Image (cartoon, rainbow, N blue to C red; front, side, top):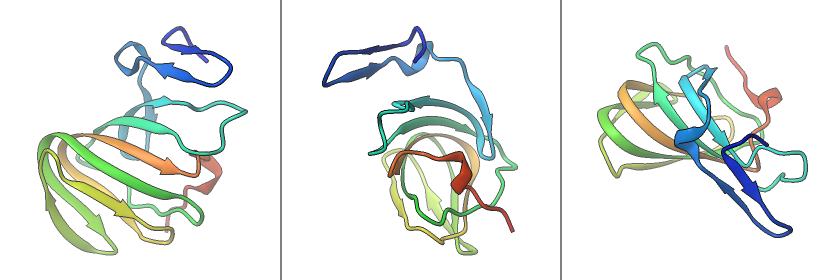
Length: 120
């Protein structure tokens, strides 16, 4: 865990605005609760790039929640308009990407595993 994460025996607190951003296929992400002893869920704050890559997961379900901006979520080739407070549940196998100037929260369940990110 980094300096923006605090934990006790039964809890973890993450300060996402103090975490360094890292590249991901969708843009820049700050990932909370990514640790060896957590396989339940993670939380990512993502600043979407216009050229987010279409991808899918074989095991992960993702919940996207739009914080800022307007754009689209492409789900199996269909473009759905999104704006602040739009929530999207993306099941395993659904090819998806976010399009537009967006900031989202992404909650992968189970916890994010970079080995479960697939591109056509």
